[in-house]
Image (tube, rainbow, N blue to C red; front, side, top):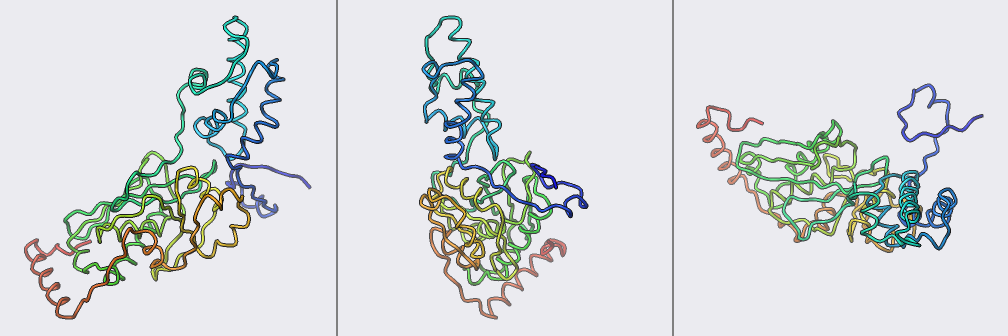
Length: 339
């Protein structure tokens, strides 16, 4: 018997078939800081020949070090950055510029350079077509911004942001669901044929994939079509079916940690993921309002700043809309309703 560790499950199939996979989730920021206090800093002091009264790293700067200078599930890079701080401090002490070093925000940037990472920050105000999703990455959770705009057109759907196949399918399913329930959301069906929808997920250089952004995509489309803004203090994660059911996701702990550090107050999660909450630290559950949802209608009710009002769509209105669409199609040479 042997124990094999890996940062990814991109392993040969026959090897994985013979192993029992034990998944270990990443540390929280509080856990990383505590590990640094108990183990990393004392060991680095010893390795660099420093005494306890010669070097001080306050809690605020340690947290900034975790948030802005490392992006990982573990603490390997955190240990490297702490050692780098101590080596720079040793040099300052050796040349006689000071007898002890206390790391503040200025010293931190002087020794380590500008912060290479930024952690998620929410928009200041609710906006139409802008939804905050939650994504899992091998180095922890991230806030995932989903943006959408509506322009006059012929029913074309455009998606950008280096999205892979699974996420593109999520957008298609979300658009089909919204169109099938348009009357319930107060959207006149012909509006889909007179408008083009563009959905974009920023940071186009980063590939994005995974079955967890469906309800965010659907919310963005409903917001665009109704012109009702989405709450800026709310994030969501979950996949959607064509009938509007919200499916469970993975990586819940990491996603909720990303929401907490990004200033999110309310998170919508699939109802089937409620059993995963027992594994979360109390600090996370107390800092967030976590709302389980099972249907897309519940998501819309919580996510938008006001509830869409259903409309009446009679056969007469449908016939008039079809006649107008046919007229526009003839004017465009028969291509007005092409998708």
